[in-house]
Amino acid sequence: MIIASCARPLQPRTWEEALPHLPEAVRASIQHNVPLAPYTTLRVGGPADLFIEARDTDTLTAVVAIAQRFQLPHFILGEGSNICVSDAGVRGLVVRNACQNAQIGTTTYADCGYNLMRLFQKSLHAGLSGLEFAVGIPGTVGGALVSNAGAYRSNICDLVQQIEVVEQGERRWVGPEWMEFSYRDSRLRRGGKPPATLLGVQLRLTPGSRAHIRARARELQLQRIRKQPWQPSAGSFFKNVYDRALAESLPGLPSPLREAGVVPAAYLSEACGFKGLIIGRAGVSVKHANFIVNLGGATAADIRAVAQTVKQGVLNRFGVLLEEEVLYVGAWPNGTG
Ligand SMILES: Cc1cc2nc3c(=O)[nH]c(=O)nc-3n(C[C@H](O)[C@H](O)[C@H](O)COP(=O)(O)OP(=O)(O)OC[C@H]3O[C@@H](n4cnc5c(N)ncnc54)[C@H](O)[C@@H]3O)c2cc1C
Image (cartoon, rainbow, N blue to C red; front, side, top):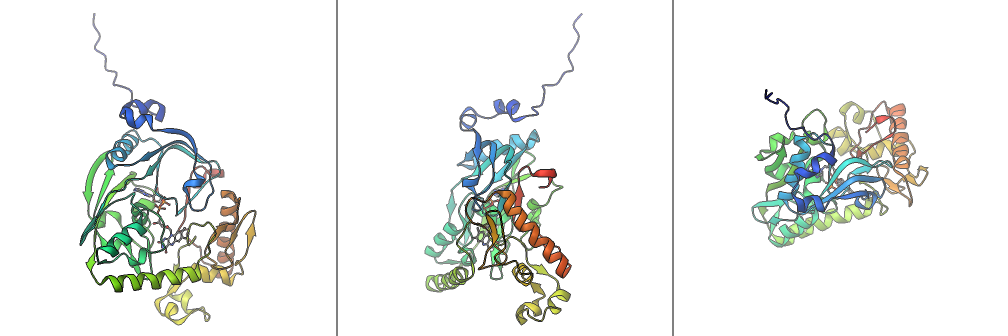
């Protein structure tokens, strides 16, 4: 008697089981146990179990589609300028997005692995305005979209026309509303939704005078040089606080900020006396109280201890719970992430 088998092919539950589902060339370029610190601007963090650099969007799609379909642990890495990787490192596969295609025009296309400042340089040469705010913001276009990067009252979300994404294993274009952008935030920073990867974006740029674009960018760059430390960091560690009552209660706050109801995290940190605080080999910059810097040889635990001290101090003194702009990545003690 023949018994019909109702067994389905087994779904891979680990990367080891899933690797045969990837094209041979992709599989061959996966590396094991790769230290991540050199891939981040904070220069801290342990290794990735598995690591691949995707140089074109087809490869990136192939890898993340498998990860999404089989629900395997994976992390998309841009230029690591907004993350703090744990000392224990990252389990699963880290996919470094190194896709480098861009076409400039009033509708500009860029792969999400493209460097944001390089994109600004290209737009300047083409006499197109919109990306001046990006001067001094390290990282990829994808990382900028995820955190809705911006400066000096301009944010990348203002330029977005369409984004190409991979979600639930499928590649498709979506409108800006899909990202649910808000201040230094998007749906990709929040849990609770299926993971998605950004492949490319169309940005709307405006024709303008090269001289004006260059002058504006230079002015913003000089402001940064004056204010920001040179040591390794991930930029502003905490988000600014939008709280009108708090702003009005702080007599020392410059009046434009008080009128706008914005309290810079740096103001709160400095008022608590945290400028120059040092724990281990990490500290709060003496130049900017919202920059946590690696003083040389810091661990991720040092960085996080400094952040925690600032957070607790500001909570105790002002009753404000600061929210990290920097994302903690990887396996942390007590399962905190
Ligand atoms: C000196 C300094 C100054 C800075 N100044 C500013 C500033 O003025 N304004 C500002 O907004 N930020 C600033 N930053 C923070 C940082 O540069 C930006 O957030 C940047 O856009 C992050 O890009 P990244 O490629 O480095 O992202 P990463 O740090 O590599 O990744 C950040 C997050 O985005 C996710 N991600 C990245 N790419 C993709 C993708 N293609 N698909 C899905 N998820 C993805 C990652 O998984 C991670 O969760 C500064 C940082 C530094 C070091």
